[in-house]
Picture 1 (cartoon, rainbow, N blue to C red):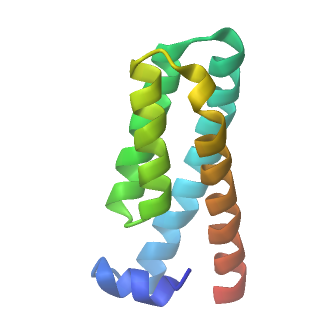
Picture 2 (cartoon, rainbow, N blue to C red; picture 1 turned 180 degrees about the horizontal axis):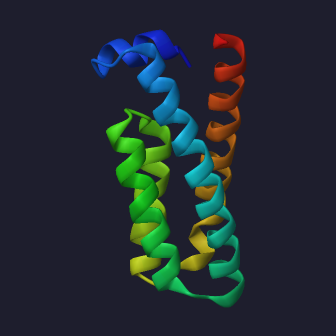
Length: 107
């Protein structure tokens, strides 16, 4: 992930983007834990709410892969198809790892 290019595309200073990305990582990591609990409890409403939140934040930051995965999770939750979420949850997790690696290389 090229953070400089992302900052430019979002018309943000690099430092502003880093702060937003840091907040996004913390929030999304917490929301993924809530997903795991929601899946265990078969709670589609919590899963849908978490997906909607992640989708909005990812979309605002131009994180397309996370946005698309969260959108699919939201749709699956709305249809009470919790079994369809596993791969997309892993996709979000992998992308969070890539973003974290990019932040370490950027610093």
